[in-house]
Image 1: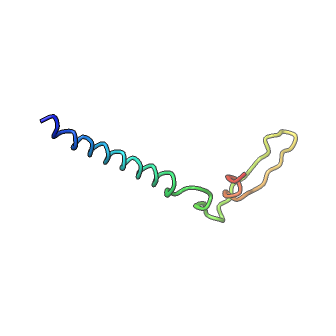
Image 2: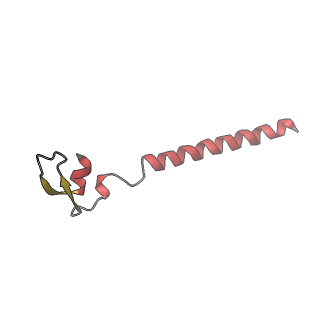
Image 3: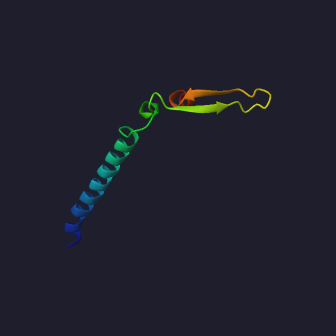
Length: 67
């Protein structure tokens, strides 16, 4: 009885490892994200954090996240 359970347990472990590998692959390498998904015309306001500077301007969200 004990010997018949080993192949089943090994099969379950292999399936779990394969599932974990596929989930990792699709999450990290095929998932959406990055600056390419941001619309080109989406803008944000940027303000200089130096009180003496007081510069304020608009910049595209793509450029904001790239810098």
